Length: 309
Ligand SMILES: [Zn+2]
Image (cartoon, rainbow, N blue to C red; front, side):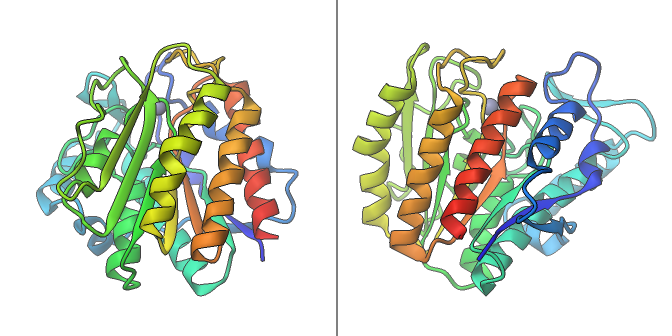
């Protein structure tokens, strides 16, 4: 089997103001780094259907986004979340990529999948865009697996340096989903304390102090993440793959290296192989140093390919 790479040029049509860290160049660098990987099964990311999005976001939210979409220039949704004329097409394809990736791994058309799209998703709450994010792509993938494919247990693991407050909000009272987030604290958005545990003890928050490096991160995953994952026995693992815990990242203060992203990917793939036939869908979240992002995504996808082979 192979690893699927889901992306679309509409990801370049989500434009942010000059100097914004969540910029078009991120996707350019990522796709350039993945270009030599000729064995990837390249798939054009479809737009999510309304029914896909309405599983977790109300119609009023879709209406608000459509009415906010500018004909030119930018619309500002919050302090750091902007829409350009192409942004909703990009966001619909980001959500659609995550949903399609689930379909592909369930159907056995790919062993696992990586969705290289932007804007990212894990800060988007039920009816609130936030932190560069518009739709909760990882949570939408999980709910699609549960509702459309009839799965009973889906795990979402988020190693982006920021707390996945949006995914937590969207899955808070979903007893069929386990959400595990490691993140720097203190750091924006300020949520993600260990006592935020979900309506069914289905949320696990693992804050990391500024300066935490790869060795401590690995120990934390060994002690806290993997036992919970094994006990939950998911039928699918969704990964919110943010690469801004990298030491070079300008938005945060953790000290992970490229090989740490390879390690966590390798371990998560090993758990997926053990627990659910290797079924794993990874969606790109943050990562704002362009070189570190490209190298870390390449390391991540290299591990996905080896696991799927
Ligand atoms: Zn982040």
